[in-house]
Image (tube, rainbow, N blue to C red; front, side, top):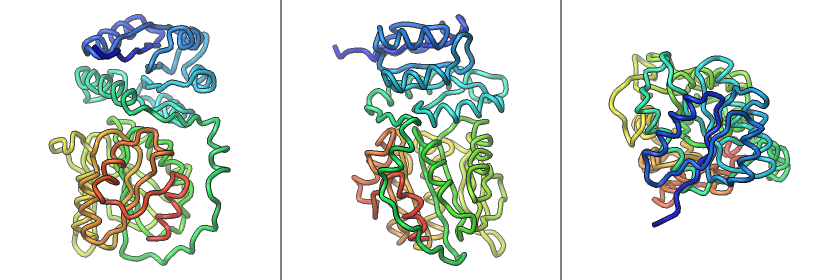
Length: 350
């Protein structure tokens, strides 16, 4: 029998520790090898129990989750999944954690979310198994500047005038901090709209859009049904809805709608990419980035067939080389580049 995935559960609430432990024990491939009620104990048990994956609360006494995360990444790095609350402070702390090196997060059950406890349980089990099986590449935030220094330097290409083009990006696990790097490098006078599907629970996409907006020259917002698609704007699909482009009266607009999950997700990258293939064809640039599964791999293939330019993030800079790997292997990609060259490559072809 194969070895079980060893998980350390960290939360200051005894009830939450029990609920998370019970959820994980439902799966025969997972074993909770220990629990901790604060960050200091988590660091100690990470050293003694050597878990494969850690679930980590943010707000705890003695040492909070962010401090503990930084220490774990620096001393004995493991794939860390944050347990996040849907508040402004909770969302900000979650995105900071992802920049420090956490690989993903799941929301704690909340009446503010329509996502059920059962859905959260399913999400947690899938994420634990995927980050373990994918042999996550840990890119601690502390090393970001060093990695940036190693990235090839070049002058940004001259931006083309606003035209009839669009950029569509799909990403999942590892995406939030990677997208931040891409958006930071796009100029404020960028001539194309940028549409993003990031697999993320409902409620967090608005806070994520605000974070990108503050850190980017583009105007970034959570997409709303009927939004006009405008150059220099970034649109993030809401965590509970699909997003597609449709031709309106003389202009293109966004349709944001519920619908069934597609490729296992809502929002689905395939839904966005399919609409981009139909609406823009050769006037599109599509990017598929880090993430588990295969959502977006078929859609980006359809964009390539219509003459659009297709880009994939490389394995070395991906937290999880999953969706992008499937797209590369299927022959759907024109160019594979490191995270540090994605913005530059987008500009070259927009």
